[in-house]
Image 1: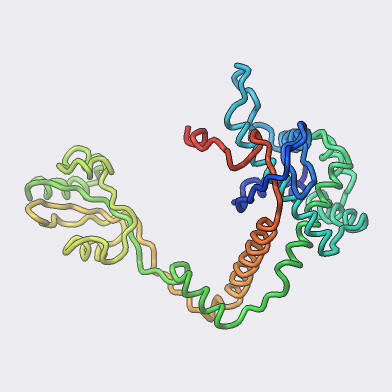
Image 2: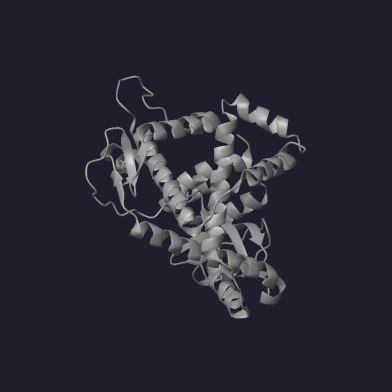
Length: 334
């Protein structure tokens, strides 16, 4: 199933979906996985969606009984719960679309299929369809997937509405994300720690003569933590290290090795590995990009609020075997 026609399905399963309030409305039918405002999602519906996902994503989709012991795998039951929740979300969205008077025409579906063919198949719809059929899908499934995608887009656009990003919004976004636009010079370095100056000076001579600094750390460093990290100091900004170590690290050139540095009764040798230049991107330079980022952020917030309201008003019942609130969290940690 090509790109946009199915990508949203798995993506939606991986998104954080708001918890749905479960309201008891009588016994569920025997074949039900869930009920959404009196509309039943059957177990067969869930199985069909899982199998469609399997056609597209193969081994990424858990097997029901991978080890053949007759018991369902917890990875599978968790995925089945996630799939059920996605179907519940789709049903709520479809019901909301009906309330809003939103629908998708056959022509819109045809146009979307053609657009996908234009993007990935040089405009050849037959090739697109064949790639779909080769995975075991039918034309009806293709059109249903496209219709769901278009319906979702329409509902989301209606819920979000027009967005006006002001200069104040842009500045607020810039300041909230200042680390993306302003960074001091950063460096990575390694250190070697000895108990006496003579050993430190010998290490400096050997390192400057071309011996591998990491091997020297392994051989000579007396600090177990330094040994464990192979001397790595990580990504450093000015002021990250104490006293003279900091000034030395930020005075050396790339791959340069320091003279021995006395610190608290021990002797340190440091080697700078990389130097990352400072970043200073002014607001005005990024203003139009930030306008788009801030608008996307505002739209995402409005959509989450809309979805939360829809879910809050929904009446949803789950079969316990399909309830996403009963996922096996221990399984995720294995």
